[in-house]
Length: 156
Image (cartoon, rainbow, N blue to C red; front, side, top):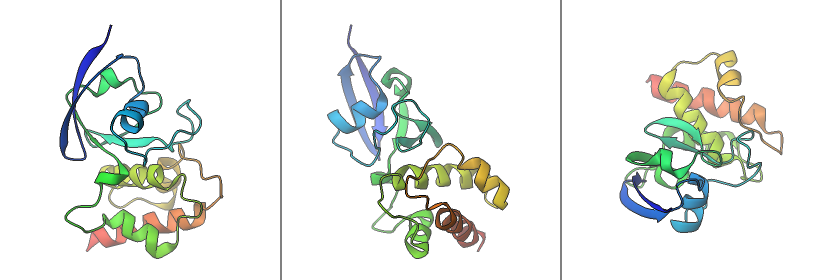
């Protein structure tokens, strides 16, 4: 039986009537046309589908849309504000931390959640915090550099 799920996505209120077992990723991509969260492993192991739900990183491919009812979702499309990139997005650009780009949205949102929880992470904290995200291009040194740079930007 379908249910109506109410959520705020990238600042816009939405109501979606759907099977409550559908993944949040499917709803974001298929119903709302947001292509930033990527379908990759489908098992919550690679992080390409990462979004922020009420400020916490979730793996949208394994999150039933019913769990998103009455929450606020931020995808990579909604991270910039008033035409300005988020400091993590800026740092990824400055460090050249995107190669093919498939993992980038998930990496950035995971990094945002990490820095919200720990604004001054050590290299070990970054490695542990990003452990659930896979970069098929093996761009980890630049990704870690970007997160260090973003942390420095927010210290000021």
